[in-house]
Image (cartoon, helix red, strand yellow):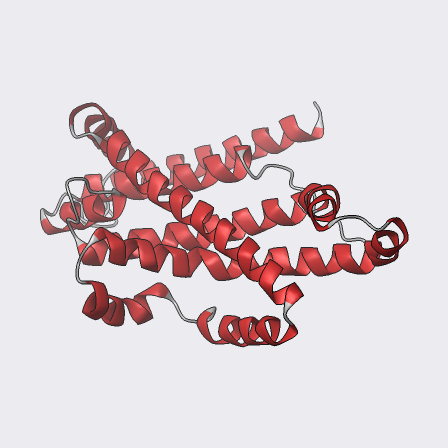
Length: 253
């Protein structure tokens, strides 16, 4: 059994132990059934939500919002890095803005965003970009600095044009940093989206996982609430295992 197969086996065993422990605890009646339903009833409710209440569509909608905000953040981060390297004063001020904005959670600025933009999709998208932009910019900026320090003599010696320098050195050399930036941005954006959806409620014609979980709580559908949380956890594991799997974070000097 190779290393990857062993890791998958350990994970499956761990998940199975959690499910069995959950089921035994529920059947022993230690907690009220309405607060701690059995795992079988949660899985049954999860299947019902998927087949009858468009849970997959809500999940796809939430994922699309996070991915869209990550793409926008990647574009903005690239522009900020280019401007920051071209103009020293701008790079210094971008650092200052990052140190101020990065620690602010999206929920903290949500009242101000609602005041500016109202309860609309534009406001939700603004919060999502705020959550994904700063970790994306920070990781890519560190990668660009690393590549510049490594290849600055090479750039001067061969007199590369800005376009060739940008593509052959930075675009091809920053892959590891890009995967790391996407991983962090995904996790922060995913958490922000679920929180904002639970507060915003219905924005537009479609709703996501956050509002679905909030609805389950209002209707005292505990099995559905746990099923929504399982779907969120599944999406996190899926993206980390497939898209961000085995990212190489080696650093060179």
